Length: 200
Image (tube, rainbow, N blue to C red; front, side):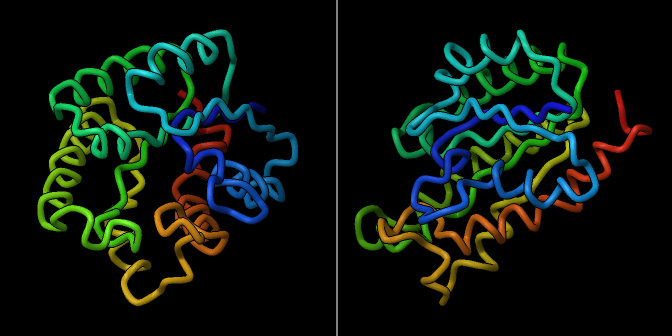
């Protein structure tokens, strides 16, 4: 039973001391109920949606997954890429991933305007608004294709303020505790999708 993860550095666990990112942690949480589950992690640090299309997607198309997760967008925001280009790339990604006939779980972009590393670097309100704009595209794509949506934006606003331990030493990526919280919140959404009755 194959779980295919596509996305950016959070999928690799950049910032974690041990245990990896949310895909590795999610697999460990799922294995008691699904012992045959294995992870193929195609995530790459620094990836934007165009990179997922050009590099990760070709590798994914040869797989036969039972579950797909997609977490991408924060680097598109940080590099000041146009939101309409992000929307087009995301739509193409999802259309092509749906050909694999596996449930797709998509995560929106956490509110990293709250990250310590960004304090004072950019106007928080501007960064926050751009993330919200990009997340409107994520929500629309998820609704259009009936994808399971993980609301990391809402989760980040709950778990980040006043809890510096949720960030790694770089002040940007999640810590071990941050990634673990992320995976635990994904679990009740993802686990039902692996049951036999949920097969597309």
